[in-house]
Amino acid sequence: MNIMTIDGYRAVIAYNEDSDSFRGEFLGLNGGADFYGKTIHELRKEGAASLKVFLQTCAEHGVDPVRHFSGKFNARISPELHGLAAEVAAAKGISLNQLVESAIQHEILAEA
Image 1 (cartoon, rainbow, N blue to C red):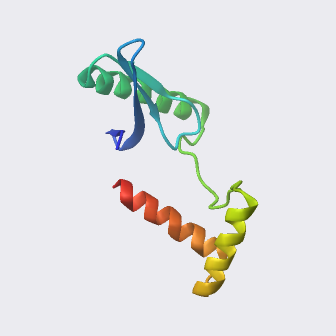
Image 2 (tube, rainbow, N blue to C red):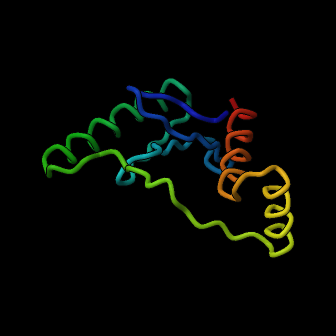
């Protein structure tokens, strides 16, 4: 996976061919904290600096730096897929929410 952990915070990393550099963006924060580097070493160094500034700014303003998730979200899928998913859930004797949760867990474990 293209995930880097810096000081316990996870960031998604992407390569930009045009600039021949990497871009990192921290996940699960209440604001943007991105960083750039030409090498992995430089990316880690810049990531740590960006995170430090973000956390200090949050502390100065009394803001929780971590974004909290409710566990609820809307998903837009085709009506046909929605119908098939409802059928599969009913056949398994589970709710549509349970089917979606199981499918998401399956995809996450496949990436690990």
